[in-house]
Length: 305
Image 1 (tube, rainbow, N blue to C red):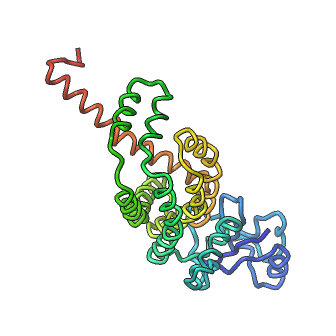
Image 2 (cartoon, helix red, strand yellow):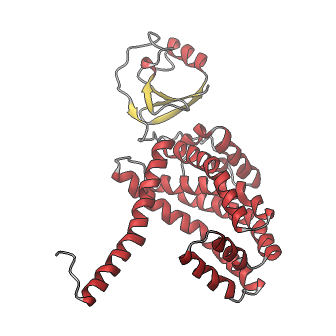
Image 3 (cartoon, helix red, strand yellow):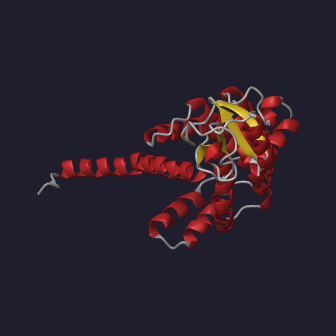
């Protein structure tokens, strides 16, 4: 397995274990150099590795938290940062899925990855348009699905959807195009909220790197999931499809996002859960609570006894 080596917050590159042994013996590497490989939670001095212990000079530096990414080397190993093209776009997609550890070498400038995300949206757009044109308005299918749940409140919503006039195809197409055009900016906004969550849990990842990494991971999912738009539409089918692909999508997203930000993927997943929990509380629980208190005030009720 390839091992990343860094010294003084500068990456020296990615090496095989035997190359590191030879480098420690020759003085090219020091036992105090920090190293990390896929699956580890922290950058650790080479002298603390069992396979390298006793080779080279004694360890003088303690381990560095994995949440504090080292500065990337001048030469990024990410194809998209080496040159912008369709070839480098798809090579980066493949790298993010097969070798996400290489993402630690990236510079992650916001502008580069905003373009990357827009390119992913452009690739997914034809699939979205085919879905809209072929399957038209989906209100009737959604209404039927809501009725099948046999929940009175949802049945009322289903009746409203079923009675609504379907929008013309051109309106739906324009809406889909505009929605996709704004999507990367929306992803960037939620990435900012995730960055706030990181700071709450004391993970010092730069905001630009966090947002750029989120754009990369989201673009990856957008392209991978785009062909599913060709499978048709039904409420039950979409629920089943969502349940089937939820876990694989999370694995793909958080492996890439975690590697790019230098934070364990499970930690990033937990931070996302925390952020969305807070958002749900702010967007649902708080307004409902205020509404109830308002009704109580108007009716002269008192919750304090």
